[in-house]
Image (cartoon, rainbow, N blue to C red; front, side, top):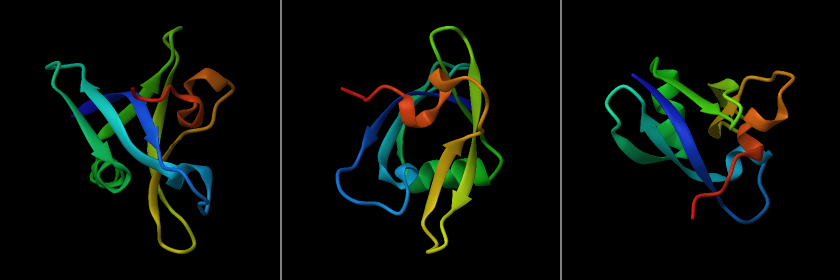
Length: 96
């Protein structure tokens, strides 16, 4: 299954890195239009287990998410680096 991230919710406070500040992410399965929300660890597990997840900016640029773990063992996802800043998960819009 492949899903696109619609928006993110960030947690307040100090974190090991900016990516672990994500509280949850809303997503859309473009194949069947199913929507949902997943917390940071659920999204990590989805990607780690072979699910495809990405963000898409208003111009249609896509960036794939990858599963990572901090030195302290904290699970998170981040976008694969490219030259397009608008498809970076850290710059993505906040959920209302």
